[in-house]
Length: 339
Image 1: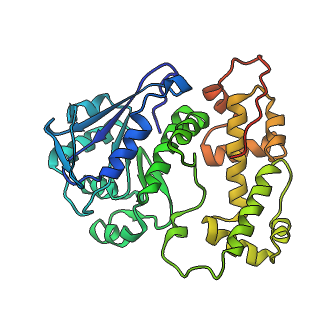
Image 2: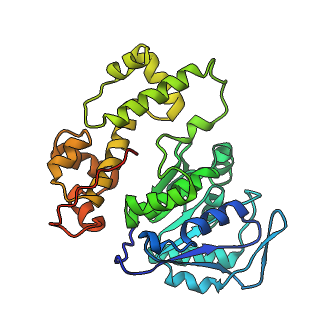
Image 3: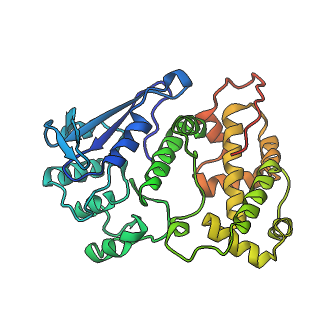
């Protein structure tokens, strides 16, 4: 995201509403940004429900949404979120599309959940860009909007100031990721804990696409035990061969089963876990960077810095400056719980 408000500032989020949006996505957006958690260290948010008019909008299931601002409020928003659609080819009203175009031209980050990608595509914002939607809708998005580069297996995708997510639960992943990007991993984890959901998921939506059921649950249980071992020994070096031996599998079989279960490779999963653990240590402690790298299994500050640059587009030092929770020099050393 391009917006990084000061720690004490209120982040303004605009929920864009019109007939046909999904009640579930509205609930997700409201749960992430519409609940006051400042007593738990979460920064203040101002969530506004925007629409072309402030008359109630019917939602599926006998629900209705009461907008409290018109679309003109989008000019004040730090982030705009577009819910998915009950009918994925529902045309958005032209005032909504035009408001999104203006916001995009201003550089305001815009996130679309699930079928909300179709709304951004209707506005012409996704032409020549990468985007994702529910795996069952990828061909429909390609067919109706051939100018969009549809990514088939991601949980969410970032291109410019636009974000799109895969179906349903991936909308939660994206919302928490947007919080984490601006306010840090600990804030996202606090919100996730209150929602009783994971702060982040590794892998891709490919793991949820319909495919034959595994022969037994034994492999899944074994792989879960191996992942738990790796997390409790994150500072140690791990190889695929060593983890495969612990699972009682050949390296090739282990890698295949691991990717089928998690949607990613063992080494990519390990890197993701190490980055998450390093983020927490950088936020919660005053440990020197080489010690953070050692505790999280990167081995060296240089290696940790390379992975931060690749995955977070920042450095460990800059990340600490942005999200450190205790004044430098206090010597606070709060162990980071395992992700």
